[in-house]
Each structure stands twice: as C-alpha cells, then as structure tokens.
Image (cartoon, rainbow, N blue to C red; front, side, top):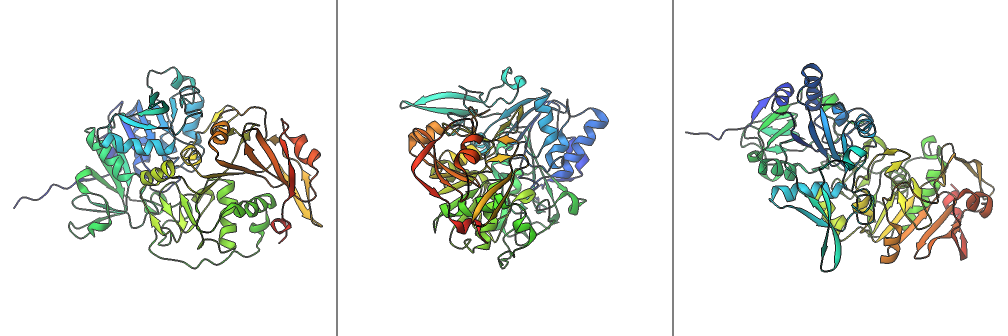
Length: 522
C-alpha cells in the first residue's frame, strides 16, 4: 500500500535552511498571537553566525511583536532588505531599520495586505479598493513609502486606476517564496488545528499564496497527532498546503497565546468565563482622564451595534467601562484579527477577547470592515487639524504605520476619536462638581497641520460620515465647515482650558452643552 507523504518534521535550524537569499517571506501574527518565535530566533541565529540568509523581503500584516520580541528578532541588516507591513509601533528594531534608511519601508493598510494573499492565491494581479484614498497611502501623497529608500525604489505596490469615473487604488500582487505560520497541532499528514490559539489570522490564504507561487510553507506547532485523528471541521490549514512542521521546544516562552498568558481556554473560545464587573480598585482610578473619556465614549454606542475598538486609549478606556456596566451582552465588539463578540483586552494583550462568540479569519473580517462598515469604531489620535484630518501613523520623524486604522475608519458609519486633550504629563482632578486641569500636557493634539494624514477629514465630512472627537474636557464634531466644539466638561474654562490650547479656532456650537456629571462622578 502507498501512503501519502506527510510534511517534514524539522527543527527550527533546519527550517532556516529552506530560506534562500533574496526570498520574500510572509509571516502571520498579531501582537504575540500566532507568532512562530522559535523559527524567527533560529533565523536570526543563522544570520548572526553565517551571514545567511540575507536580503529578504519581510511581509507582515500586523506588528507581531512586543518591544523586541516576536518578529523584532529579525531586525538586522543585510538580513532584511525590504519590509512590507502595516504597523511597527511595538517593533522598535524593525522600525529603527526603516528610520535609519537601512531597509525599504513600505506601509499598506492591514486589510489590503491580508486580502492580497487571497488575490495572489487566486492568481489575480492584485486588488482594487478605495481604502487609502486621501491618506498617506495614496500615490498622490506618500504612496505608503515610510522612508527615502522606499520612495526612491523601483519596487512599487500602489497605483491609481479609474473605473466608471471613480478613482480607486490598485494594490499589486507580489511573489511569495515562503510562509511561516503557527498552529497548535499537526497530524502526520500536515493538517493543522488551532485549538489553543486565540485567532485564525490569515493562515490559509497566506499558505495558499505561497504554494501558488511555488513557495514553501512551514508551521510551528505544539503537538504532533496521528494521521486521521483530527476533527476535519477543526482543520484550519489542510496538509496539502504544508511542507514542513516545527515542534516548539520551549512552548511556555515561545508559543504563548498572548504576551501575558501561555494558554487560555477562555481566549480560544472553548470556555466561557463569568464577567464580573471590576471593583473600584486603584487600577480603575489611576488615570481619571481615560475613565472620563471611556464613560463619555460609550454613550455613542447603541444596543445591537457592531463596534470596533482600536489599540491604546479606546481599548484601555472603553473596554473596562463596557465590562463594568454590563454592556457586553448588548453590543458586538470586534477586533480586526477576526474576533466577534465578547470583551476585548487592551495593552500588550490587545487582539484577544474573553468569551468571543465567533472567531473568523482576518481577511473575512476586513471584507466586512471595508464593505459594510461597523456601526461605530473608536480610535486614538496623535494629531488632529481644523479640517478633521487625523494623524496616528507618524510622530515627528517616527513613522509607525497605520495598522488596520484606515481599513476600519474609512467605511465606518460612525468614527469616534478618543484621546486626551494634551499629552505628556497631563494631570486632572474632579471635585465639587468641576473638572480642573492640575498640570497641562507638554504636547498639543489640536494642530494647524497634521504631520501625516491617516484619516481624511475632508472626505469624511463630504460623505456625511459621523465623526466625533472625545477628550476628557471637550467634545467636537466634524462638519463640512470644520471642527465644531459641542460639549465641555463642568468647570472647564473654554478659553483658557480649550481654545488657548489649540493651534486653530474651532467653530463653537450655538448650543454648547455641558458634559453629564454622571461621567465624572463615581
């Protein structure tokens, strides 16, 4: 009897030998979810010892790191020649290579990258989309180039195209030589399940794209199972797309479900946990500004809404309010990596949820975001100008990328930006029914001109999109005439605490309201 040939079961060091100089390598992950760290470490060790492989084009849709860990192990030249990704906020090593002009840095919206995998797998030339128009992704601005090396390179992935009189962006397909991913269990035929993972990510389309290009697929797993013993309905990546399997030798350190947790049946959706409202601990009160922003922001959510929470202040401020006030059962929180329902986590564990109702693949989640659009999305802000343009992707000379921000905000029915009025040492207090600014932040958020356009306020206002800007002391709405001040916190001096801390004069509503005291009082 002739048996099917299963994948090679190899060590991380052996996996690196499959990577040739000049290869295009795709990795999947999200923060530290789904990150094949043992293979990354072996790749870096090989380069440090031998100088090979080198001149790689590294493609990653999400950050896949935690300040030096994860994909950041690959931050070396000439190991890396070019980086194509969406966000480097938690990848200081890779970001340094971009900023220092040591590699070509190309930023694409996260949703466009993951859907390019599907286009490549299906032998299509690329994807057409309106996502990115009017932002730094647009060829009429930076074309996604994060540095001069990318701007001057002949390697271009974004162009313009007109269809039926409407302008679109064309994201060009590219060849893939190797895909490195992560699962939980592989059987002897290479079928992969993810029972201990918190997200499906883009495993299947990325693997199919690599195979279509004649490339290889290597998956890091925890376990090897006998052929035929896995539930076929739980196989996320069929063995026909897998060339090699690496069994993790240090699971607790390099195969964790999140940064904080090695394994969690709650995050993977196998167990539902009681959601007890947080108590009034010090952690709940250590940042009053975030608490007030979160409480005001949740007032923009209606029962039955499908909601997206961005990383940073939205996840850290709004998520706890939703859990504490028992709103999780009334709305649907979503995360761009494919999670629907439950209560999302913030900080280094952003990307997982307690008690998710569904976990779908990331490209399908972005199909929803790009097409239908969420009822409301809550995002942070680095800078905003009088036209409602928002920058979250470039801080001074530091370009960290857009992540899924553009994909989510551009089509959303309502966009709520949540941020402190100033940053860098802001201290506030609330007593006697009044908010007081004890110490103003060093950096202004309301500026004459944003450093980079990640959200185009003019396009949003022209389309009739509902856009709000919520801070701890004031709320603004976006109209075709610009930003309009609509609410102020009780006790706030409009001129001293608001207008004098802005680089421009907003419109002041004739019906200027005082924010509800319930937001500020315990």
